[in-house]
Length: 401
Image 1 (cartoon, rainbow, N blue to C red):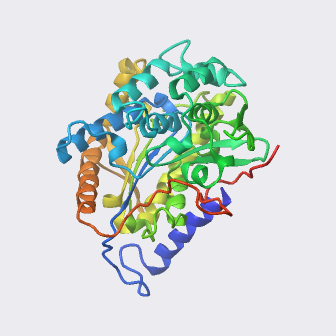
Image 2 (cartoon, helix red, strand yellow; image 1 turned 180 degrees about the horizontal axis):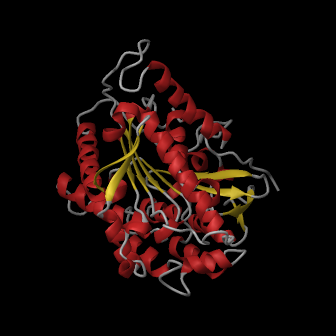
């Protein structure tokens, strides 16, 4: 996390020194012909247990299909990097892991149903409830493994980043496709990855495919509830796969929240529960990451960075017991934007912002059809005799048995 903080504040420092709305005098503005790397980042569960993010993806995919003229396009066709934490990591895995037909394991609609039917609030015996209660992943982990079978991080369609917290090293661990293709010791089955990033009730013993790497994982929501900074750091430091990406001006980022709770438990002097404290910390960190990232984008924050978030406190009481209706109401809320030295301001709705960014993403997709320079060069096999850890955010150390 210290490395992530350093990266973000280095960018912020540059903005402060050389002006927020003006280019650096030592670095002229260059309209890069290499295009922009497209990043999708998905928060942990929060107030809607992943349903707001899943609904946002369905809406975004619908807009992308309409604007591109490709009726059967998937969300993975339009993004180069997917990062997700907790239930956000599960969504990233479902939408970006390659199935037998070469397409994603789940469509956006299927992923929404999966999350809605198995969320902690919508089903007493839901998958995530079982995962959170079981110290070893339990039956919920079995469902993940049944969903993905023998598919691993190497089987993802695009670059994927899913964090957890490793108790054995006392540091975040990032399951990364880039690392998996570099080193066998970093390749994990996707079912195990989902169980690890979803584990809040207790540690989940997670072992790499070759049995060389073992971690004691607790949920990604504890490590980094909002993985946007992690994804940006990964892209800017991974020159093998993103050779022409030099700064935030070369990025298109869509960051999906899952709804801020109006009250995280406890009133007045009442002590909140441990789960409520986890939610408070997670949402506070998510907001801080959003504000820092927005500042780092500077003048391009309205065209290159989109944050979709809702607030449960502004939802009618009649909808708060139905997580699907609550997510619909959040999508119709005003979009909140962080502005340097001006706090936050409301713009159009979250739906409007998704529509706007669908246009930008399709423009980038069309631009690549006529561009000679590759924006993304995903590694497929290990070619180096001395492989390196390509993900700038994987902090745990692999170990041999």
